[in-house]
Image (spheres, rainbow, N blue to C red):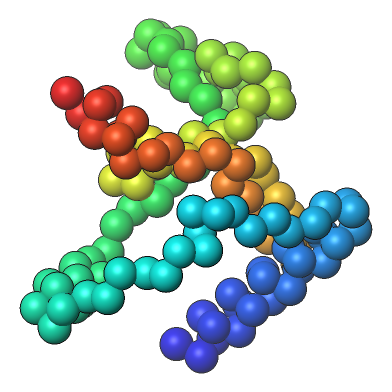
Length: 129
């Protein structure tokens, strides 16, 4: 657990350093200034039961549909053209559901993703219908 915290601290420091280099400044949004609602004991218990459920998070660069014939002909050096253009943001999926868009970053020789747009709960619910 301490190792995970150290890794997160390294990422946070590296991202803060990268943002500092770009001249960007942090902006606090009005909606984030509000005091969080106090949870009842029952609500906290219910929340605690789901916080440790593992989920699969994946980043999708793009997709392509190809025939099995073409799939079997792929070998080292083959190029598969994706439906997405170069420079477009990646899709961030949790258990196959789109939750955000982001861009690839490299921190301490490891790939990561910086979220650039988080899909609102209302939009996610609309896509389920």
